[in-house]
Length: 379
Image 1: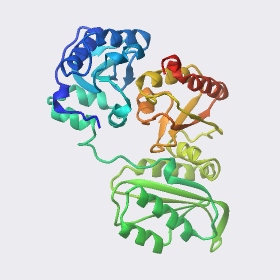
Image 2 (image 1 turned 120 degrees about the horizontal axis):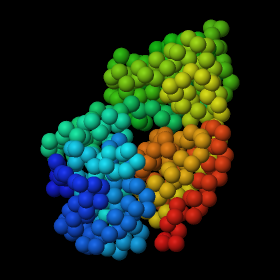
Image 3 (image 1 turned 135 degrees about the vertical axis):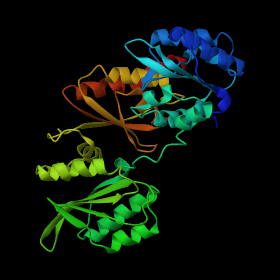
Image 4 (image 1 turned 120 degrees about the vertical axis):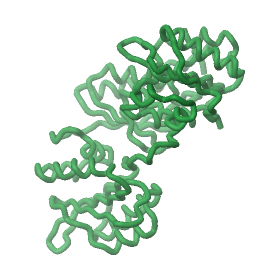
């Protein structure tokens, strides 16, 4: 498996422009024995075709499909430019990651990197890094606390039950599967009665056994009553730190505004969006489609950029889930989020869209994926 070593990281680099930065990265890849000297031409050609800037101060330049035969072995080189490099379109890159991929063995590392690089404040942090070790820790997430575990894999709808203990056990199992709680948490939340928040929503937590902050939700098909109190949905919280507070604050606002009924309809993606939305306004229903990625090397930066650029043409919001991956929800309009899904050949992606041009966008995405996102003639 490809690893990011300290020898592959250059701190405090300077570049006149992005072409100069790319040449420096290509030279490093060549010296490391990863590519032939002329591979740099493919990297520059790719940049002319489509920008390799993926957001948060990060660019991932790479060669064209036609120059893949110039790759001797899969490799990676990371350059830090503290003063930044103008990457066009008012975008500044502080970290430039050069990747030469001979196969899909780089995808695991790339997924790990892009997950770590998803921090919106990352560009401020990486400007002041002074050592390769510190930068490596940030890039691979070694120095970062565990992020809140809350995605569609932790939300269950259409549960057939007539007692809340079933929901308690279901949520506890989901949290345990996510390695967020231990046996003491499970014992506590199963024997103690949850708290009724009103509007059919209940919540429970435990003072012990919280390994990682996480939230699990289960919702019944048909509401039932507990001592004349309606029960439709149970939220179970593992509170290892204060990360769940943002979701709980959002829930509190929904309850206060008597809008929590939004959680009692829709699928798991819809519930997730309601609880993570910045607005209390009614969130309109979504359109969902599933597509299989057939690209030989999955959804890496090149086809990922093609897909994101297609999505950006339409007036709609799009969330994407890799059904064969972690099932985390990604913003379809963000390249860094899409690459972080770790999509390999044969993986199924679920697109959930909302907005005026949602249907048109899904049709365009379907056509693009069927044509292998511009790589069809090279496969």
